[in-house]
Structure formats: C-alpha cells, structure tokens
Length: 226
Image (tube, rainbow, N blue to C red; front, side):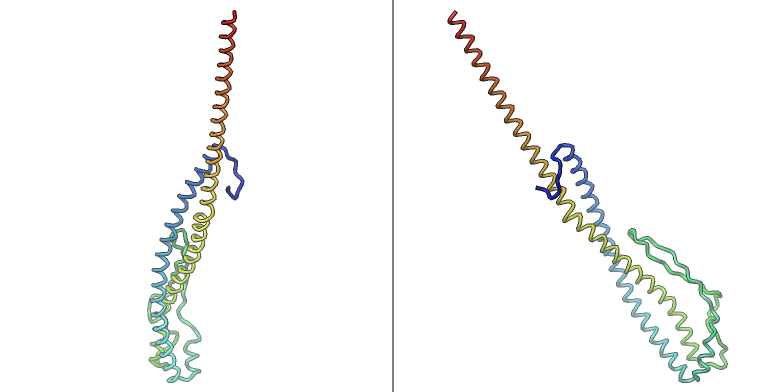
C-alpha cells in the first residue's frame, strides 16, 4: 500500500508511469552533474592547495624583506616612504559558468603599465631591501587574487554538489520508490478488478447456460407430453 492515496485507474497508472520515466531521466542527469562537479571540485581543491602553499611561501619572503628593510631604516622613514601609494588598481569581476555554477573571475588593471610605478618613493633615501619587498608584494598580489578566485569557486561548487546530492537522494530513495510502489499498487488493483470481472462474467455465463439448458429440457418435456 503506497504512503500517498492514489486513484487505482488506468489513467492514473499511465500518468504515474510518465512521471516515473521523467524522474528516472532527471535522476540520471543529476547524478552525471554531481559526478562532473565532484571531478571539477577535486581539481580545484588541488589547485587551491598548490597555489596557497606558493603564496604563503612568497608572503614569508616578502615579510622577511620588510623586516630587513625596517632594520635598516628608521620607522619614520619607512612609514613616510609607503604612506602615499603611487599606483592605483581597478578590479573587475566577471562570471564563468561551470556545470550551472556561476563562479567569479577576478581581473585587475593598473593605472600605468610600467613596473617602476609601484614604488611610491625615491630610491635615494630607501634601502634595496624595501625595493625588493615592494616588488615581491606587487607580484604576489596577482597570485593572491587568483587564490581568492579559485577558493570562491571551490566554495560555490561544494554548495552546488551538496544541493545536487540532496536532490539525487530525494529522487533515489523517496520519490522514485513512492512512484514505483504506487504503480505496483494500481497494477495489482486493476488485475484484481479484472479477475473479479472475469469471475463475474463466468458466473453470468454459467447462469445463462443453465437457464438455457433448463428451458430446453422444459420444451422437450412439453413436446413429449403433447
């Protein structure tokens, strides 16, 4: 007996069979989507780990260079050298569709293309370590932006994988079994009704045959008596 009340008719049976075929096709498509998303997600996670290790290593080097520069220069001179940035950056964001997931793509453009424009100070009063630190920080910025991009992509894909997994499970363990159970129930009821109709028809046929035989015997007896 299905959990949901169903009308055991042939029309309902046809409708449920159509819904079942649609649900099974949807289940297969969602499983394929989930599997492909998992593949993309694992590749993205590997990329995140590698890039994160690279960025952390470069940031440690930048920190080391700034530490040396701070040791060679007075704190006032260091602060004065960096207080007014020379280069401005314009950040833009577009989206890339990965298996119905819109992941952000970050890009930035600097005001000027010259690498020397990242230094907001003159070279005479600063140490070479400060130059190296600023240069390294400018280079690692691009990798930081890339890391933010792929980490966000991994997060969005993980959320979509979870939503897709819930839909697959709902179809696989709830919706499809319920429809199959309803189809079995209706089929069984229709077969029962068909057997009952067949039995009734056979009884009617027997009654008609019996009446015909009795009527024939009565006519034969009347003819013999006459």
